[in-house]
Amino acid sequence: MQQQLSIITQTDIFISIHGAGLTHFLFMKSNRILIELATIEWQKYKHFEQLSLINNINYYCCSIENGHPTTAETIFNCITKKLFQICPISLS
Image (tube, rainbow, N blue to C red; front, top):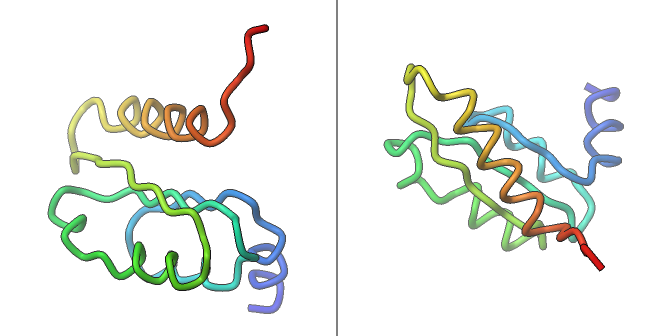
């Protein structure tokens, strides 16, 4: 547990599927980023989003379809889009 807490306190961007393990983000420093991967059914539960607001963590959610053949591609595209929103690339 000590090693897990040590890692999470040094994490800038935490990406995880919706579930109990996601609560580790509570030990992140302020102004870090949480990206939750959640199915439509789980997105109605806003507790991770609310806890991130309380703890000054920037929250983003990626919708995934359970068992869909393009799930991996959907996750990759969503995470890429969120990261470009967070850290835009200057083309100048």
